[in-house]
Each structure stands twice: as structure tokens, then as C-alpha cells.
Image 1 (cartoon, rainbow over the protein chains, first blue to last red):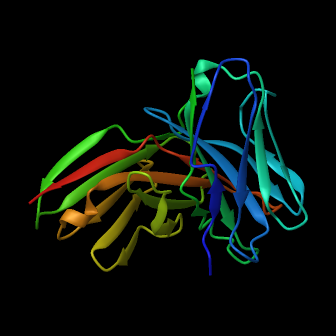
Image 2 (image 1 turned 30 degrees about the horizontal axis):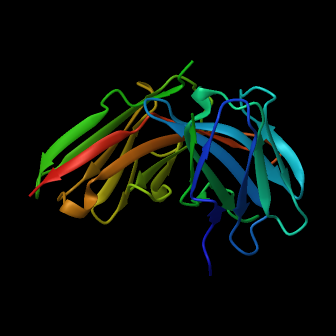
Length: 114
Length: 115
């Protein structure tokens, strides 16, 4: 079974631009979560999608948004980028029966905002 | 407000000795705890977990201990091996009746095993 795939692996943007990150979950997984990792802050929860619906959201500004498609693939968008948005963005999926929060993570997208 | 805290950003341990990684939490409603391991340029991978109704769970060289009264959990690795060098994150689950439980992660501890 293929793992969680995130594209692109690296991105460089400038302040004020917007960016879209993509995540393909493990086949059969319907839940996709997004996390932001920065030094000293650990992994901060952004949001979770299940069956194309956002069912949980973290404490991030509205510039951070996401969506999920019918094939469970998910995208995350950040508008009006700020320097502080530079981080590793991780996507994780889990199956319907994986109720023990065993998330499977992708390798992440490293975003640098200049 | 950091509800899950890993107060040691880094830890160095001699190969073959015991590594002990600590994690404290503030939310008494957390009902499930997990440890994840992360190598550079890779996503975190699940290591071991424990339910709040237990105080110990073992899996090979890895043991997690939970002290609910102190709101503290620890991960013991015995014996430590060079391949254990990584960043370790503890995570805690907030329960929900709707299947949308959220994980709250700590800030991570970088473990270095010295050969």
C-alpha cells in the first residue's frame, strides 16, 4: 500500500503570495488532517477533513483553508503569506476503523516565505 | 496555551543505556496518549500508545508509563541504539462522540544516541 503523498516537497514564496499544498492519503483512508511544524512549537493542528467535510479546526487564522475531494485527496491553501508561515506542513491520514488516532503522516512540504 | 509539554528539547544517551523521554500535560480530559518518532526529511511515524485506563504499555524495547495523578507520561527505550536517534513527539487525544478526536502534540525532544 502506498503511503501518504505530499506535493511539492519544497516551496519558496514571497510575502503576500498564496500557496496550495496537496496531499493524497493512503488508499481507503477517508480522514485527512493537516499540521504545521515549526521549531519550538511542535506540531500544531490546522484542520481535519472527513468525507469532504471539515469536522475539526485548530486555532489558525482564516488565511489557512483546506478542502477535500471525493477521492479523499486534500489541498491546503494559505493566502497572503507572512514570514511566520515558514514551516513544515504535514498531512496525515487514518482509516475509518483506526479510531485509536494512529495517524499516518506524509513527508511534508517545507514552505519558505521570503 | 501548551497543553502537552516536553520540557527537554534534547537528550544524549550512550548506546546500550536507557533513554527516558518525558511529557507533561494539563488537560485531565485527554483519554489516549501516543509517541511518534521523526527522522529528518520524513514525516512522524507512530511508535507506541497507551490508554488513560492503563499505567504501562510495552512493545519490545519501548515502554510507555502513564501517571495520571501527576499528568505525566514517559517513554523508556532499553537498550538504546544508534537508530533511535530522532525527534520524539508525545501526543494526547481529546475525546469526542463524533469521531473527530483531535491530537495535541508536544514540542518534541531530540534524542541522540552516542556510539
